[in-house]
Amino acid sequence: MDYIQIEEHGDPEVLKLDSMPVPEPNPGEVLIRVAAAGVNRPDVMQRKGLYPPPPGATDVPGLEISGTVVSVGENVTEPAVGAEVCALVVCGGYAEYCLAAASLCLPIPKSLSLDDAAGLPETFFTVWTNVFERGQLKSGDSILVHGGSSGIGTTAIQLCKAFGAKVYTTAGTPEKCKFCEQLGADAAINYRKQDFSEEIKKLTDGKGVDVILDMVGGPYFPKNIRLLAVEGRLVQIALMQGSKAEVDFLSLLLKRVTLTGSTLRPRSIEQKTNIAQALRKNVWPLLDSGTVRPIIYQIFPLEQAAEAHILMESSTHIGKILLKTATN
Image (tube, rainbow, N blue to C red; front, side, top):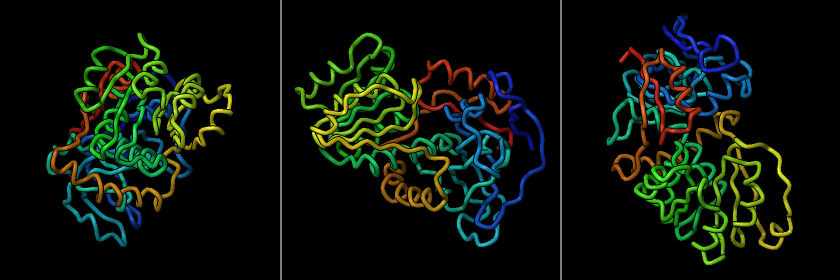
C-alpha cells in the first residue's frame, strides 16, 4: 500500500510517498481501506519531531480517517466487513489502509459523503470531551471559542449552538469572522484589529463567559482568567503560543474558576470508547439530520501531503483539510 513517510523531522517537504505491506488487524481492531484522512495540527507537530507517536504505534501520521472495513481481528462483531465508517486512530491515517480500534469506529452520517466524514473524528471527539464533559457546557451558558475558523472552532460553534449556548469567537480576518457568524456564532471578534477582552466585556455587560475553549495558551492565559464569569471554566486543549504565562490567581479564587484541559491521543482506548458512545448518542443524530457538519476547506491527493501541511501552517483555511487516497 502507499503511505506517507516522514523521512526526517523538518519542513513539509520531508513528507514523501512510500510503500509498505498492508497491516493485519490485531484482536479488537479492524482494517480500513481509507477513502480520506484528516490533516490536523498534531500531524504538523509530529512531522517536526515535537509530538512523537505512543510506544508501539506506527510513525505514519494521521489521526482520523473514513473508509470501508475490509477485515476484522478476533473478538470484533461490529463494524462488519463492508461497513463504511469513520474512525479516530492513534496514527497511520496517511495511508491507503489503516488499523483502527473497532470501538472507535462510527457510522457515516446520512447527510455526509464518505470522504467528508474523514473530517469528523478528531474535532468532534475533542470538542465533545473538552467542552461538554470537562467544561460542563449546558443550555443557556455562554462560551468563548478561540480560533473559530479552525476545524476545532467550526465544530465547537455548531455544537455549542445546537445545545443552546451563546457563542462568541475570535478569528484573524473579516472573512473568517463573517463565516463564523454565518455558522452560528453570536459574535465574532477580529483579534488582529480588536481587543477581544474588551469586546467580550461589552458583549456580556462585564459578567464574562461561562466557558472558554482555548488552543493558544501563552499570553491568552491571564486574559482568559479575567474574562471568565463566576464559576467559569477554562478548557485548554493546545498551547500554540507557549505553555508558560504569568498569572494573578486572585481572580481565580474570587470567581471560583475551574482550570482544565486534555490531549486526546494518549488517552486509553476505554476512555476514547466512552467518548465515541457519547457522540453516537448525542451528536450523530445532529449529523444525520444535517444540523451540524464538518466544514471541509480543501481535499488533496495523498501524495500531496506536503502541500496540505503548507496550507495548514499558513492558517488561511477555514475548517478541515483532507487527504484523499486512490483506493476509492
